Image (cartoon, rainbow, N blue to C red; front, side, top):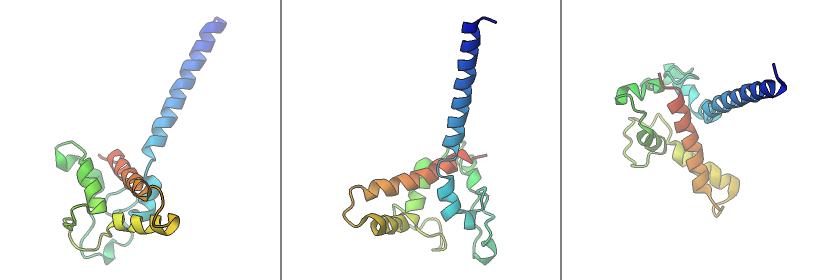
Length: 139
């Protein structure tokens, strides 16, 4: 095999490896946020089987089936709005599910102060990480 052919093959293999690693990294976006804030109720796989399920009045939904129950399309805006409770409708039922948008606001203000440049952007980014993670665990 010629040197240039070997180099091309090596670069192609390297590019595929880097692309695969990037995709794996993208799939992990939001996972830490989910494990920290959601897995206790929704389970580590998002199936609604978290360790405190026996203490809840209503079982959390299986978050891996959101696309399936929405005609095969992941309902990104609805999921985002549910997390931040944008409409203040409490459409997800009782107050068992914390309104994470408010919690994120409090955390960002506590960490950066009430006049920080961009706490809303930080909050949106954290919620979008969760939404991205949920989109990636759909069955």
